[in-house]
Length: 364
Image (tube, rainbow, N blue to C red; front, side, top):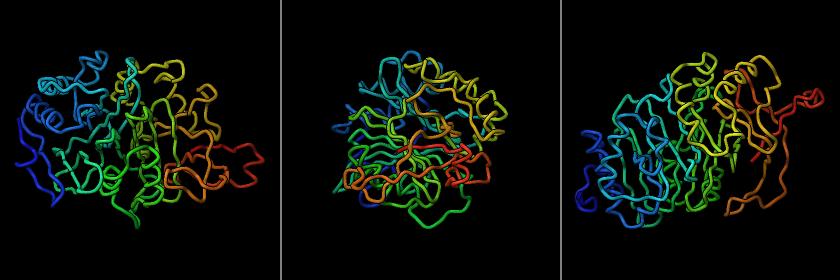
């Protein structure tokens, strides 16, 4: 077994260690499994984008693919028995070269948090253990400090996808990889994650997907450069780069359809989620109309173009407490979801538009 405390493969400063993922899928799986098994407190948590086991999730076999199944065998060989699971799909899950991430519940009731990568370079796993704060694992590009995906010892898994169409330039703010590191090294629950997102301005528009094993919840937040919008309890999330997702969604790429179909048998509340054909038809219809087609039952968060179509009710609060809850009554602001790829994701609605019935409420 690898001794990660005394002989790290890579070093990232006084408080960070890392492992370069290399070798066969089985060897990679064994390396990742050894890290988790050899670290106290990790066996009870969701794996951070590292585990590929399917013995408890047989319906995910087809989704993981040949590479994932081989990696899963290596993880299983270490004897790791987690309560929940996250899958990292290294192959192209979408036909566009972009990052995508998703979260849902398996038929066994377990949270599944997955990430699809571009596959242009070999990712590396970074292991952080600060003197103060939570230990965490992050998946990063070679040479990158911090990462865009990872988890901490409190059972929080965070993944990020960039939103290119609201704003193409990077503004002032914290780099996304350092933002994820800051969140995971200090947050203990979803309220902590939301609080830190509100208090720390991201350097560019992005979508943040978070799952919490301890709270058994999914949360999705988007920052468009001006507005922070959060879905606190969505039943499932499939998100990615907004601009590229829209362009390819309208063309109904076979790879994207195949990906959605693979997820379809894994979820539980099937009646609350439209089938893939309905999603694509809705995207095509809504791009030509100011009134998106309604395919969801009341009370179920709608999907927007990420593929999150839009938010139901939105509350914008001026002050937030340390627990992430508003300390003052919320001020409701009507917003609309822009259909043009050149426009912001969320845009204030004028009084005239409200009278014309184009008001769409979105919610934290």
